Picture: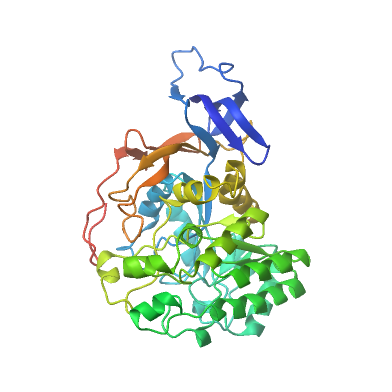
Length: 454
């Protein structure tokens, strides 16, 4: 049993934003009341924990519906346990895994492996399955069977589905099953070298880069088909102003479409790629200031309804390769809340409630998860954070460290993460729960494939 006393509770689902006590028991929220109105039982046989919530904000645990844990297939980058711990350190209590593992999540056996391993972590681990067999863009997977085995959505994230007929048939099937289908929107016909914007950054490095039309072309195609089929299509990691406007118009036309923005796309531009090199190389790439501002406006007016990290771990030796050879992607679970607070709420673009809605309630609702809200009798999945505390990450909990925010001063720090009614991360003590209480390790095991990681 846990009593959080005198915190600021922000719950977009109920419209609550005010001082509250929150009582947790048996994995559920047992009570919510005015400060001082709740107490732990006096029974000596009942163990309870009191958390002083003064100066802290309590919100629904974050729900990140776009993460890569590299398991199975590339456990030297991340695995399901280390990824879950990184999520807990970032205030994330539910994640939805992408399916571009090795082997692919295009069959019930691999999906069962992922979900079973996820049940051994301190948070809720869900997974998408692939749209096409082997992510080859041809034959569709048996989506109905995969849904019955627990897939909460479908995606070939990491690879665009270039065949329009295949994409349309997939949309029709997911519409029938009433599940989201997410699209990685990059047409290779407009890309010379991916991960770097075809603008000032590409010129700086002397390469052709990735033209903005690569995204615009496929977003336009897929939104048109989503309107035709009624699919719950999700435009992943949106990066261009034009794509934001296309989503806005599709929503106005009545489409059941959604879009996600990553923290790096609303906080950084191609200048970061020039400064940090491979640590800021990602697909789609960081683009121009006008694109960053258009993404923020899309978040502000609800065109973009989800914030998701696209947490993409890579080993140090991989990112040390030459720019055009290094893999794309950065980690983001442990910095997403701070970046949202710094770049969205502090400047006044979003209220804190609106930020939490896009990081918790909206993604949970899209994927049909029992998460993203705080209510008596509801799940005891919460994050408690200090909006104003500054911190400088010297090392992340994630097995990989590929982030341009490493060593940067951030504002807004997770103090506690509670999942299933248990404290799974204690930022004050520097510990988390992962089967048993243990302090966060340095994560300094070998970065080479096959290195031993505990």
